[in-house]
Image 1: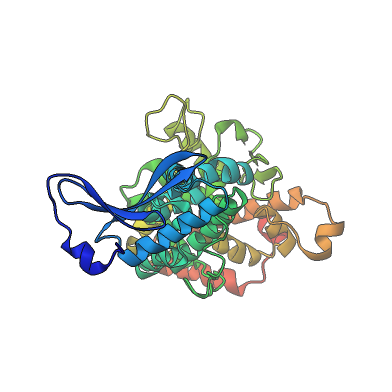
Image 2: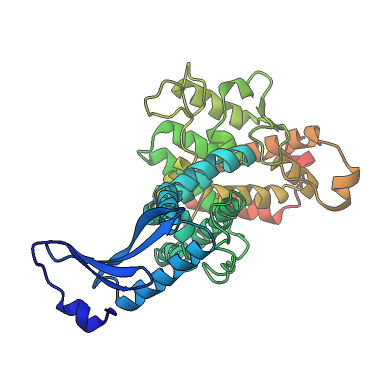
Length: 419
């Protein structure tokens, strides 16, 4: 009897199991309770086998015939359809989830290639894992990833969306290399399709804004170590991560030197930061806050091994100060822009400023000039420290305006300021 939809709809429970054959091994099995199951009965290497193809009506008759044909084709090729199905089920159960991929990617790739893996971990754990963590890596689609990125853009963080897209593209490329899937679902995702093209960050603070920020720090309820940290960034021009992860063994106050090791330096080379009188005073204040600790900014979390504080803490501090200091989107990177811009007004040559910022010199300078310009950096940082000390002693806006006009109008040089 050939199976038809009309026949299948008419099947009912009889209290006993029975079967109705269709042909070429295809049949349906009706349970005592009336459950209708498509099945393929066949012999493999002389042994009788039964391969279930789905239950009716969730599986249609047309779908059952397609599965029956595929199973017969496997049998014709000398393969056991039921064994193939069981293997596929095992692989599905053991297939990696996105959570598994994130953990492996962070361990084997990010931890090995990046000196500071915290940001990559934050992007993947916060934005990707929460949305796609339980999905199978092989099943994740481009549309799903774009959905995650669009939510980041919608909350007003297009640059963060671009960073997340970039790390996702790297991670799924890693998955392809491991054989977890055959393609990268992020391959067609670009910045223009996510957060848009990014403009170079050119924001920097004026002397008036620097004074306002310093005043806001002094009057705020923010913990003293973080107040001092912001001031140190202003005075030294260094990166937030190089400061927040620093250890006291790197600070030599008698010699007025802060040595950033190659392991934490962005360009992979040790970096010496001469400390001005103002900077030394700030580090002395900081040492009183973290006496006996390994790190300048130890994490408050209880752990067996002392850990440094999260480097994003300074972003939160500045975010709190934006309103009270009448600033807009001030960040640690804006402080570096400020340092570079205003120190140049002191007459400090660009290549010396670049060395202070620990940037690699470009062009022919990078090829032929291997000077570290340490004496020039020392003079520049002392001159800048003296200027900030003068600025922060101002008692009113009008006094700050007078200083700013004086400094911008006068022909100045590092030599004249330090003579």
